[in-house]
Image (cartoon, rainbow, N blue to C red; front, side, top):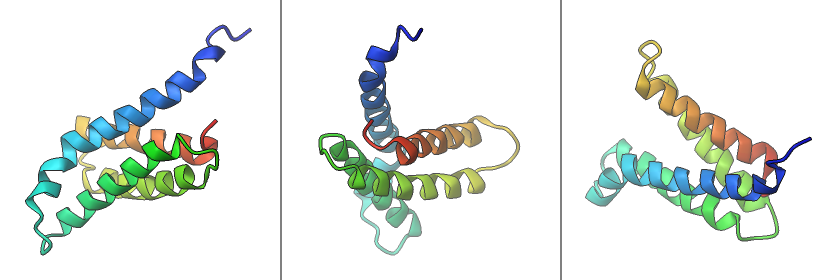
Length: 111
């Protein structure tokens, strides 16, 4: 018996919206500085572009956009988790959470 099964679609959209909010909170200031000579700008650019693509992919019937954008966000999040590792800290676990959510979208697509 799975009484919450009817809310699976809502859960997927909540994760998409949360990813956008997370990216906005963490990367939008670096993105707005538009310093093309800084690696952090390009990482922020990748997160912003592929985060928006993940959100837009939820409106499409094909899953390709969702899966590809989730894959790029997954790779970027794994890199951030690796860079922020200094023991089990809040920064490290927030990146692990991002890795988990993006991995969900890689494996489930728009289901």
